[in-house]
Image (cartoon, rainbow, N blue to C red; front, side):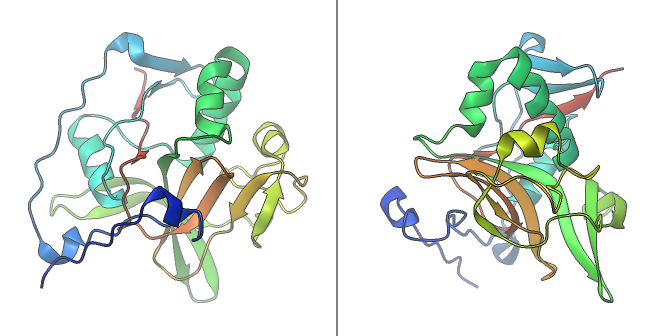
Length: 233
């Protein structure tokens, strides 16, 4: 099967769903992609004491889909942030590194986006969140944790929006998602989907900032990357 590539420029993106990226179907072509080496100095990591974890200041593995990103991180001894860890990271840098906080959350050009480790799957009528994904011995990405999505999770889109400050500081579930009573604001929010083909990411551009829980894991974009996470020993 031939790989289909759909190029979408920045102007076109403004007329589409803000989360649309160029789709690259590497899974169908089964092309072997060499895993890049992540080169990050120890000084380029930020330590978040509440999690005893280090997070890379810069995004890495740009232009990779969600599956490739997990593989690249694991082969470099790192992993992807869960939504709950991302919330703690944002909370910490909001107080200690306002420039980086603005770099991630501010509404401005260019587009900035990063993958989060949250995959949504249904079991009967229930929706589960899968996190902490690892490659097993057969090279298949599997979650180490799977739990019922918190019943207090906001389960409707807000376009706009929810308050970013209320969300990260006070009003999120233990799984890292906004609660039903989160205050209104400017952060666009797309709730977790039950289509068995949705993962999470956080993005911002010149029009809006948004938390997406409804994006295809096979999507990719040149501005879409990940923050490498490591548990400090």
